[in-house]
Image (cartoon, rainbow over all chains, first blue to last red; front, top):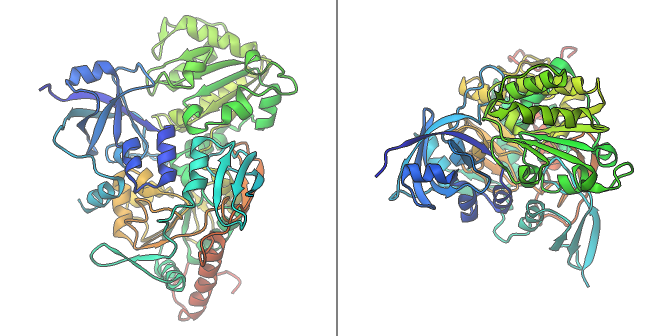
Length: 132
Length: 451
């Protein structure tokens, strides 16, 4: 098994995220749309992960399990993308550096395999993390 | 025979499409089909009809489960929470009408709260930059009719504003743009080869977070000065090519999004994007427009602006309006434990704030007013479901280019459900009663001076 790899994380909207959000954030479709990390094929290979396997994403600010999928808007080796939502926000850099805006884009992360772990739903994830 | 409601406004993104047609059942209670909307807009209308929708307020119990309560109890809890708090944060406001925002601000003024809208995690950086250096802008109609060079910087409208390209910026044939997309040059700047970039004439896939460098390089290129071989991961030949296209536009526009506002540099990235626009006006006519996300985040800024003078992060806790992003912004307040109650309406910080801020909301007295079940409602002490603005109740909304458009009611809300405006009005009146009952001399920063 390969060791954890380092990537640069950005987040943002995808149309699947938008549709699933309006369809209900408590529904499985929202987890499928946003509980993912889009990675370049080169990075998936470096990690030793098949497409659609679960991975653990860890940053200085938190840790979350998401499903690794191949990026459709690439190539972007070294860059990873988690659609905006609670999964991304479990690991993004919350520092505003004195101007109000958390640093949602450009968080250094480590990605490791987590084949036996589950991706939690949005409500489960947030309710679990707020108790920690 | 079903009837069709025409010219419906889509209450999803800042593009505020106004050409939707919605088929409703004869008795006017059910939405059957949505025409002309994008996938997200259609889902919003159709989801409002879902059978499992929450139609009454719910209060969190000790074990974390939720119990249904009446609207009267919800109004009482909300009013008391706001009156008892020293510095309540009243956040959201972007997915509701200007009328509701205005009533919310009255409550904030009465209780000495802080009003912040979703710009704080969206285009707050842009608002700061606009205050610093101004903004040469225009309406989307001008773009449709005049623009022949369109730049998308750090935004991906194919996903986030799906009908922007077809209604305003790339494909439509306008008065001076009779050839539609064939007569337009499209430049896209993004760290990913996005679905928008795949359509572009020039795609600049820059290194993430190097927007400031690339914008500076463009300013150098406009002046025909020498550039290093590579800037922000882009070869100089491509930068000169993009600069030439922009300089030779008859009418150009830069649309920018979260790629620049949320990357390091933040408001400074927007500063220099506006200065690039200013430079281009030496050669031709160029505008710049923020790709606003929520359908009425622009309206929230406008209403706060005319009531208090600031577009977001407005602190009314001292009895007068203060504005200091970094101090009076929602995430800073939460992370520094500087607010003691949270009222959320028309937004979902539970899903869209960093988790460190969400943890603080979960520990405070909190009310979430939202038609949907969201991570915010599921950590708040009270969830108040309301009618969907733009679907079940009308109201004024502002498009991303600051054009106000009146949204339309299509169907009735489920029986007995309140609208944002009704709920806020009741809370406002109850707050006034509670304030009047408060013992004489009780400390209150929001006491009217002349009283």
